Length: 328
Image 1 (spheres, rainbow, N blue to C red):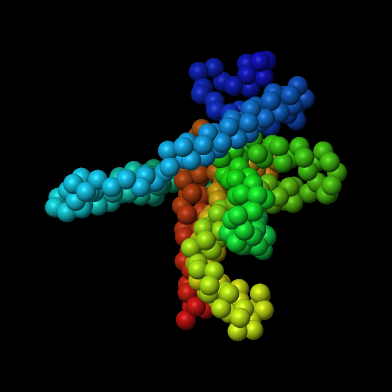
Image 2: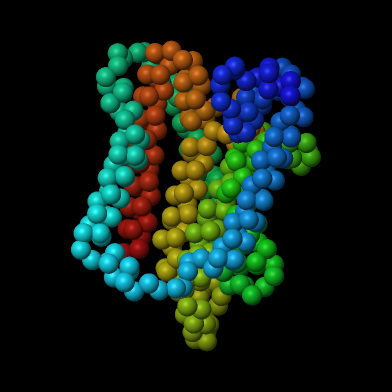
């Protein structure tokens, strides 16, 4: 395709989501990129749907997890050196492949020569990111918890089974493809005013909403329905039974879903750029700094990453502290 030759750098490796991001930026100057953008987005969405169906069929066919018992191997792997080795390797993997690479940016910023840092654009992008993530999380909880309750409490219904499958789709579709599809829908149908912040919020809700639904639905399924039924027989209304009986049991799962939705929205770049190419959230701003390919850009991006990590960590701790304090 012509767009491949015009937008991709020779020798560079491009995935579907990165192509969507590049072509979305080029769409302003080259209207011919609209067709390739739509084609790649549709292809990624269809492939994700096929993958979801295949995985579901494989799980049903193989009956995972397997119910067969192997006494001797299980006994061997449950004592002696094997459990200690397993735990040690798990901790070692966490340190070497997760923690050290994730926080290596701290040593990088300290070791290189400091460059001038303009706090204005970064703080604006950071506040914008927190605004979007906060609004998205509130919408996810307000609308995701009721759907999770419906799915978990109506397992025998056909509609519940269909919704249980469909809610997983945004989780496996690349966010760049999903974001472009959402952008075309919301801007092309004239349903709402095309404010950039509103488009970004709607896009982020689409791929974070399932995180809340999945967490809450899984927690509700583990709760014995007799708890709520007993409360109902004692005169409690449905809302009272949920607030006084079910909510205290599943609130940790609601919190987990909210944290996952917030952090997922806070760190998203692909869908944001696909919906509004000119949007500047904190992750998009960091990507723009890296694309400068200068020492000053790398240093500024590193410092911005550190600030984003610290602010996000403090926010998560504060949220958990407030939640735990209310529970006591």
